[in-house]
Length: 181
Image (cartoon, rainbow, N blue to C red; front, side, top):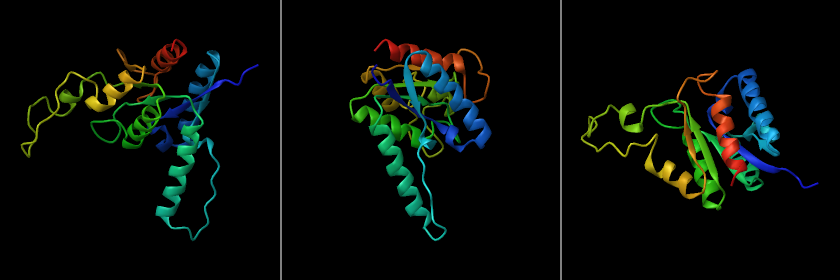
């Protein structure tokens, strides 16, 4: 029997309290298993840190561990719900770009129904006179364009999820689409 395809799970959930993170990831992995996939969470790596290790060194080790996990996966499903601002978590966006750069398909979901332009104030210029992107997309055009060109798809909620940052129904749409690639 062939090994199941490994799917990297990106999103801001890594910053949630442990119980919340574990519950969401367990549901994601369960849904992936139903379709014959193996979900890989960024926290699935085991790292130990010494008390005297500098914080930047710790950060670099986490980065390398997560890159190794992404390298071992065949696709990514990313939670692109805005986090700590009007756009997706920047680490998640990097992970999407990294996977797309390797020629791997990217799928994403967001529970935010408003387009980026609306979240940015629905105006043409910000307070500094800088143009605000207005392409009728959920987030920056480079994110959506990359997902689309990778053969993936971005799913936008039409109703709230069971969690402010997660909807099993929306995640399952990503998994179904991935299963058909």
